[in-house]
Amino acid sequence: MNLTEEVLAMAPKRLDAKLLRDALGGSSDEVGVFQALLGFRTGTGALKAVHLMNDLAQTVSNQIPAHDGDLLCRVTREHHERSEAEGNSDSALRADPELGGIYGRAYPERLGAQLISDLRSAAGRVLNVDTGMYEPGKRMASPLATHVGLLGADGFGRFLVGPFLASLLGVDGRARLQELFCSDTDPVTRALRPLFAGVELRERQQPEYRNAPSHFDSILGARLSTLLTQPLSKPTLLRSFALAASLGILLKIFGVGRAHGRPALLALSSSATRPRTLRRVAVQSLQRGRDALDRALANELNRHPSAEKLWSAKVRTQSPTVEIRRERRDETAALQAIRAMRNHRAMKSKGEIELYWPDKFALALAGKAGLVSSRTAGWGQHLRLSPEHIEILAMMFVPPTARAPAWKTMWRQIRDDIGVVVGANPSEDARFLEDAGVMHAGYEELAKNALSMLNASVSRGVARLLPDSGAEVTGGQA
Image (spheres, helix red, strand yellow):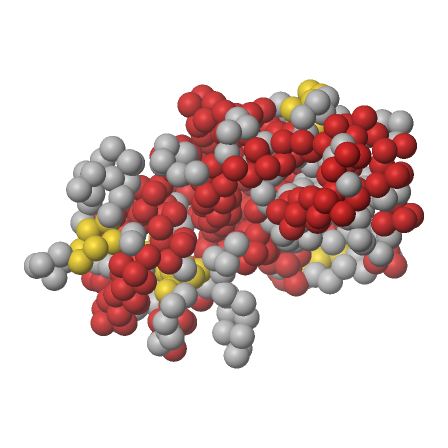
């Protein structure tokens, strides 16, 4: 290599940031790297468990109320400041040409104005517990929608999270969910039956979904299906599934770059003060997961149909760009492009669209489910488990007909299947994290973290202590 070639090789290469953004996030006519790798899109930070369940329910039942949830919005927003403009008064709803008949059957005039108002307020308290019942026409979703007739046409279906989860469950799991959302025997559905009795259900236009489940997807799907077999009330089971699915999305994204798609994450107890060093380990385990994600994204970028255009296109002077230190397209260059794009700041004046990274998408969703710590006192985010989360994990891993396993055995299975450790098997858990590139975690601190979770689980009835100083899970058969 002569001097000129050496200088050219060292000179930074400029890539068109708009082309790179479209390759990663997708465009109107092309699937992006994120979706190709994960099976779903990540273009939002607003997705919550309620939207996930709304999408999943409509996917498995293939139905949605013909009014798209607008009747429910108007019923529950009687006292809202925009009620008059929206036509939410009793007289306006009765006179509505499309919804008046349904509303009149749900709230006959003979009940009287005060009782009708009280019943509408009660419906609002149930359906609108998280203020997800927006202005009519704004695509609402309710966290306690226990029946297909109570679903709303929220705008998050385009991200394909519902079809992704449905693809994991298999025939039996999908049938179980469909049965749950079509049954009207639970107390919540019975109380709200007047709001959907007689409502026309239309067929949902299902988005095309092609991704085949990965090895990790199959394991996660089996565990979610086990959860659906638990003998719980429908509202409790649906809530548990929503939290489990939120955790599953986090694990999917932070494990996709590792062998078999399994992450390596340390989860800390939410019920105790964590030692400073253990918090570092938990934070770093998420960071290592993001590093692995970036490598997987880089490999997928090299295979993407627009990769050749991205590397060969001449960048205009005024175009927003990112710079890398590699002239040729290879794994190193693609990884540099990913990292450069992470540091790139959108310039709206030049027409760029914000890029929502999968890890940010996962952390936002899991954070709303209480699974991820917030950034406080300078600490990065990390996975955390409350007693409720631990109970849900136990129900995912211990079928109702199985013999109750030892506490440590369950956590060993959780680690080997979905890559979450808490320190129940300190030396094994520490080695598992180190093999993933995470700093050494002290055995004593890991054991204390696991003990905190055990004590909280005993109080909740998820585990019981044994005379030999051991413990076992209370699920399954004794």
